[in-house]
Length: 279
Image 1: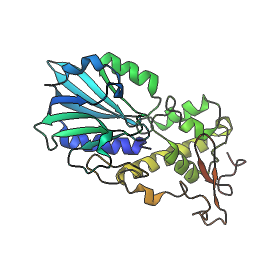
Image 2 (image 1 turned 120 degrees about the horizontal axis):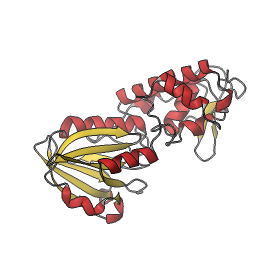
Image 3 (image 1 turned 90 degrees about the horizontal axis):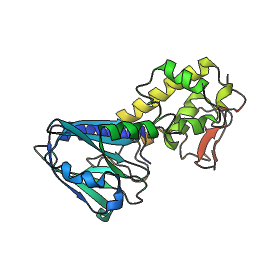
Image 4 (image 1 turned 45 degrees about the horizontal axis):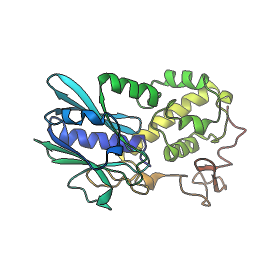
């Protein structure tokens, strides 16, 4: 479930509490939780945490030792969490890795992932560059409006699927795609090629507004998500359509929020998001 806002909240909390700390040990409970770089694990003790960045729905810890920088990248996947030792957690048997620190406000960062759709990757700089190139497209919060318009003009297919395609636009998942499209008045299945430039510009502005607002609220705690300190995100209280099937449209248009069950559920109001109104 964690998407871009949740990953950004995670990165900010880790940055605030662990930046500059020295990593003393890494415990891995099962080797298959490490996607690549398992053999380099002995390098990390003694390195200091110098950067914490969000990459799409993932978080990258940048560690430096003897002027060499390597990374631990944590994919949050559908159920992955990074949690401080002080955070309460359900089902501690699903902690598959622990990163220990000294000289910080928190002594330990835990990787909790019951369904294991996400993994850890241990990478050098070249490995991180390859990882980013094959996994992540345009970042919604760092790309300009011009970049976004150009990207959509070059693509084909249904709009919601494109927003959620991580190699095209990194970080937007099902929750925020539904919320963005409702606010933009666009049907999830509208063909990208039908959108005029003005409509794409409005979509970009609304996308940025929704993502920034969600970050300010600590993300959306739907199902298992909590921040590293154990707090829940409150943006779920501001969801207008996600999970609201059968309820009246919040625009008071007289319509009902519908749920289209496809590969991922689409929530929308057919009156406010007509498939015919794409211009």
